[in-house]
Length: 334
Image (tube, rainbow, N blue to C red; front, side, top):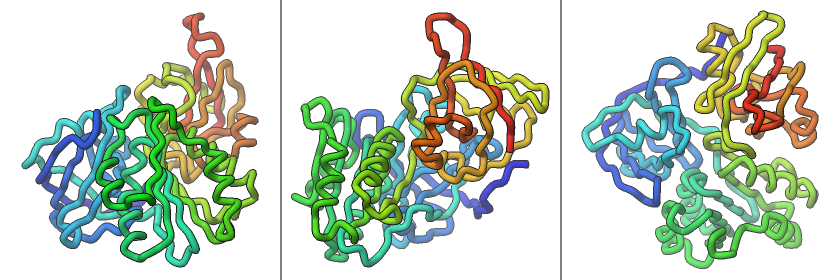
């Protein structure tokens, strides 16, 4: 049986829409039951039936006591319905949403704060940066993207935070050097009291986690929020076999193992559906391809062993992409 977080749903009306970068839509909602959204919160939006029809979006700004909540959504080229549906919204449309949910709180009392955003991950950090500025805290905001055209809120953040913003743009030859960033933190007198908050692609967050551990910085001072489930390989169709149930299920490129199992009537445990909580962890009995771990729950060494995976985000790719034969994963559900 699927385990889901209990939430209070309500209606919200779309009151503004605009584009804030190439492929990124800004959507302002007016919820029926306003509640201020603290930095780091998100809301869930229902775009379909059941748990598979729910998407989570960071609250970029909360204004007028939560009467206006700003979201920003990147249109995914492999959208399974979520981002495409959000991009079709017009002023006057109604949505079913939750109130603000907190999984990524901004702590009080750190000596220094470093916020790192990769791409659309900036949406989780805009409110945090503003809160730190109002507090008079010591902080830096590190923004990384492929090009300025796809970096949402870039000009606004530079205008608000000035020289506290560090911008790294791949196509300008200034990509983010993760090891240099973390080494710089480790060399400062405030290293032990520095907290780093990060949101972005899994590859970026894994690199930061490795470097953070490699410089012996306190693990509890590294905080993260995931968005989507970008991986090392393009998504492709593969097969999942459950020997204990004598079942074989096809996983399409635009869906997850978890969604495919549930659609086939296979009961599973799940909660976050973002690769964070580990509740949907399954044992890998055998694999004919390469497992693309897209979670932040397993450690790097566990991912290298590939004897377990998170059903909600992990995928598989064929060992020989030119053979036409899909990868096959044999799993034991736990």
